[in-house]
Amino acid sequence: MPELQTLLTGLSFGESPRWHDGRLWFADWGTREIIAVDLDGNREAVLRVPTAGGRDAGGANQGPFSIDWLPDGRLLIVSGRDRLLLRREPDGSLVSHADLRGLDYGWNELVVDGRGNAYLNGAGFDFVAGEEFVPGIVALATPDGAARQVADRIAFPNGMAVTPDNATLIVADSYGRCLWGYDVGEDGGLSNRRVWAGVGEGAPDGICIDADGAVWYADVPNRRCERVREGGEVLQRIELDRGCFACALGGADGRTLFLVATEWGGAQRTAELAGTGQILMAEAPAPRAGWP
Image (cartoon, rainbow, N blue to C red):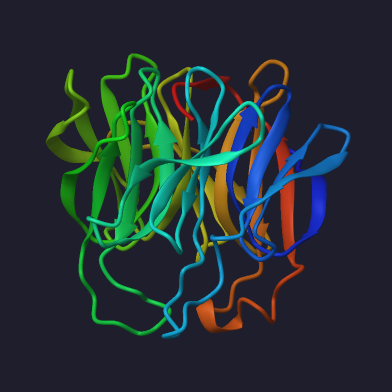
């Protein structure tokens, strides 16, 4: 197992790590901040998202928000409470990039491909509130802001990644214990769903792709991060002492694997365990590839 180094501690609930412009960016769901940190541990709270996080008046969980960038460098932010995909303009203002209210799901993950298509996914039920299980979906927001559903029947969709050729979208299904693969059409639509990799007793969360075509996936209940090839062969495993929620490749040569980890005792203990979040680093065998 590669040696782990600690980059940050004391996070409330880190998610959605992305390497961008020489720093690791991530969302802290507890503080509703988007934070950027360099490899020396110097951190900056770049933006606070007022409409993301928390619970609505009816008690429904509205917590998730995720980030990624358009090809022109503008930041996209999933705002769970308003069910909007926001865009940060060069002057720092936030505007609506796509309206997701017509697709009534609790939006979670986001990935933007090399053509500017934004893929979002959401579970069909609020597991925090104890709602009855309903499978989730994947939606597409095109560069012009139009949004539509492009995939369904995913038990609990989580991390997503797009291959370097923009031809395949990979979706982690935490409840389905697999990574789904989809062919991406010219219009951004998805087809030819198949099991890209089964993960046995794993529960894949955030994912990223490397230049060997392998996928790293974070696993909360099993407290680890695994690297698998298409078909499911496990190539590498990193054991942690707390739940691993997400991972990203970055650094100067793309070979630094960032692991976002937090103590997890179930959704009802999130506030109690706030402050146990960490970002760890390890050397990876292959550099980053694709998106994010």
